[in-house]
Image (cartoon, rainbow over all chains, first blue to last red; front, side, top):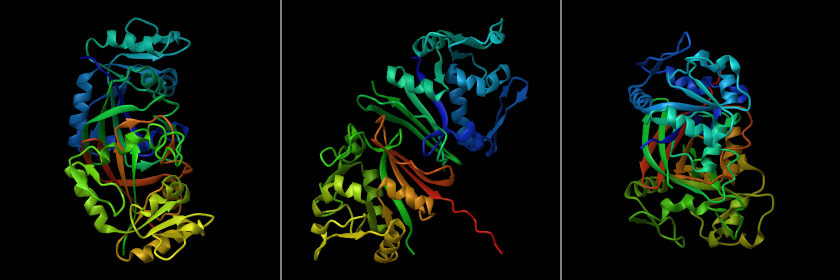
Length: 199
Length: 209
């Protein structure tokens, strides 16, 4: 069954980026282990060195992911990942205006201008039966409100950042959303948490 | 020497109470989901005389019993004290220090479980340490944790993550400014209806002269 999920490194106080979009400290755990995870973005080698526990989690996540959904802000901040996302899967970008330079044969990016629901639908089609991972906080928030999110995966980083971009914000839910913990992996420098959204 | 620790239940989206918490609505809108784990297990456990008996999972019961053993004294904020209606005179732990600007005189009497501190969080922790002896001082209010973190007084945080999104309410980690705090995971225990996380605060190294 095809799922819509999240995958974020998040500080204990709930931030997925620090002030000025700084992600260095939140991503540090990906370079502190002894197991190689090969990946690249554009021409840049972005191979990771994680613990064996995290490597197993990465491998499962990589196998399961068929497409990503990102907001336009992330797409721009990430510099279009140099033309290829490190996970090497197609990315559906939610935007108001389409950056024409990326509309071409073989582009891994699909631009959707009619909202989050449509973007998720598009990503599900592209993912070929595999899962869709939402990579932007603002899109996750809209997916939660629209009831489109099935799973929440968080790589919990043992730090308090104090400020930055919060994953869970602007939700103003009418009633609480019940979750179920499906897995906890305590790895060196990070704790991997998985929850299922109870529908 | 005892440690200064913190313990509360937090939703995955970071709230320790839902919106609109008040004495009539103790955990705020939808906040009852935070304490589901206290009442959905098969192991009975009593926190203190006069408080309801809890029914938790056997794993949670084990952790709670360990926590009781190391409890020396607790520090709460006045807002929590009021919302909990002074726990009917039976706080979750004693001695029970309450940080406040004004002392509620009805609780100042022989045999009262409460000690009111009007000169701030640092003073409350200092007094609680004295009362707790070798055992730990446990902070149990979000605003108290925030203030104690800023002055470097917290050693460990035990956060029970409830599997729920509340969408609003009282944030545990708020008003911290932009100074970051490095932590170290002590535990991550997944049991039915709650994930017990524990972190040590990595103290900044003092420069040697």
